[in-house]
Amino acid sequence: MTTWHTLWDARPGWLNTASYGLPPRQAYTELQTVLDQWRHGSSDWKPWDDSVARARTAFARLIGAPAADVTVSSTASQINSTIATALPERARVLVPDIEFTSNVFPWAVAADVETVPLARLAEHITPATTAVAFSLIQSATGERAPLADIIAAAREHDTLVIADASQACGWLPITPDGIDALVCAAYKWLMAPRGAAFGYLSPRLRERMRPLAANWYSAPDPTTAFYGMPLRVAADARAFDLSPAWFCYVGAAPALELLTTLGVDAVGAHNLALANHVRAGLGLPPGDSPILSLAADPARLTAAGITAATRAGRARLSFHAYNTLADAERALEALT
Image 1: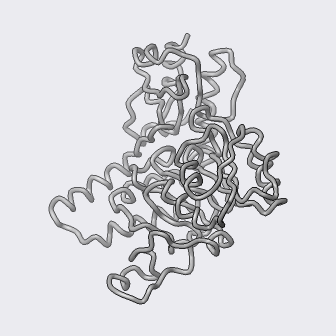
Image 2: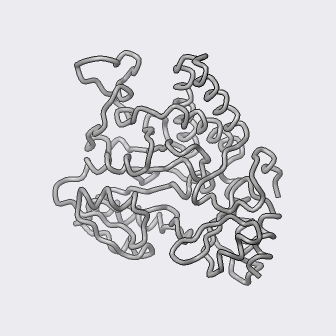
Image 3: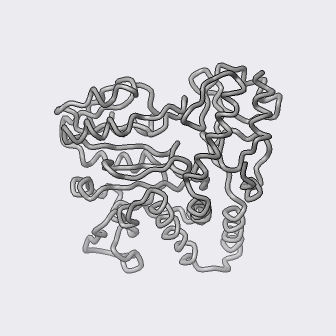
């Protein structure tokens, strides 16, 4: 096992990254420094704004995409709502029957939504399917979407592919190949403060979209767009930026940069090893997700000092870079 946990100040037994991730010490320190500057008025805002560019660049590196194709926002649902402007009238959007509402409600407002089991998404894509929207990793169960099958079926019918990476990006190697939009709330596996979110928007998708929340930060050079007409928006994904919540990005930038240093492949292997250690101890087959959904009494976990979540009536445990073998053993002891 790694010694990565020394880069965090995580309390032993925190197995709840699928709810929110813990900041690496460097991210917490940078954020505290900026909060102190804000408190005293000892800094201009422009150094804080530099964190947005750092975070955008780091996210782009994590998914292997050009930074020009990445938009910044505050929530995944806001990005999805803007993507919905690309849908024609009477559009049909296919989603899994168990999907987090931030990747359901934006489509339900804008289109007709059809729900099917996650494992059968690909076979239900037809020429009438305008878009298919799904999470790469299902938040309640940790189930992986059959991405390759979905992309293949979507290409056959010219269907837009909209993937939510909020429970995947940071531990699962991801590329945008075959994906039109990859949306990610950064406060989980990317370990940023809540209020930072990223979206990869393919050029073919952007051609169909409207910058629904156009603002000064959407301009080619925001520092020259403080006042007045004419309308001017960037030619790339920055046209869809929200005006950033600076402090969230001050915390996001060093967290994402650390992930690029550790390597997503290595982080994923670490996380899966811990999750599968618990699975093996419970007599379960190995899995392909660091999220475990178990029929267990949450009170037993709490009594053992384990912080987990309850989703769909089951205990949900999730392992990340700051967790150790001791965390896995503590969970096993509580569960057995």
